Image 1 (cartoon, rainbow, N blue to C red):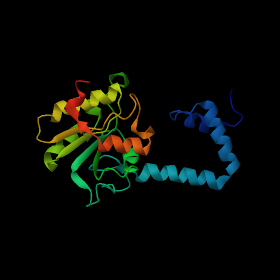
Image 2 (image 1 turned 45 degrees about the vertical axis):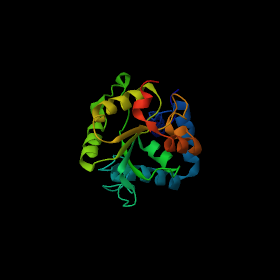
Image 3 (image 1 turned 180 degrees about the horizontal axis):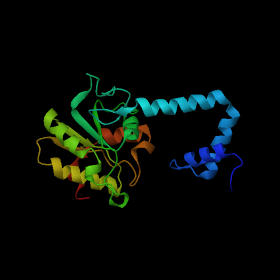
Image 4 (image 1 turned 45 degrees about the horizontal axis):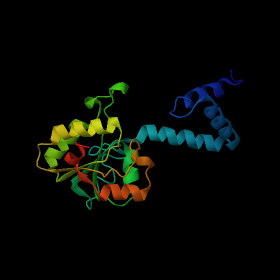
Length: 205
């Protein structure tokens, strides 16, 4: 159904491009914003423009930041010898909420997924390997989702750094198979991190 307003039609089309939002949901959001008045819509537009103009990837961990180094990488109290490898910033936020990890992170920016056209070269794996070698990491923690893509990515990294003199671990499988870290409750996620196991021990399971 074509909407009576061309500007509304365009807004609905743009919103419906977002993941998880169909045309009906987009229309509902647009109608809600119209009821809020111009100030609310202008604030939303300004915040999105600000996000586009000022956000960037942290030079060290590749998380999202407003400056060259994010607050975690710039914190001298964090242990730079312990690196937790995650898929994206949502996993960083989930792990930080547990207050169980005091090292630093490395955000891959996705998982190896041939079906989605994502290979190792599309992720920040080379940067991770260079960081490990240059910083002399003591431990690398694989905190990736227990999915086929997560396991494939973890194994690929293991093959790349398995010969280095460091401790390579994986969070304990307290998480249901196929679940993402962002959906785990803080207690389960904290225990999974604290009870992490050597990565090699997961290969035979």
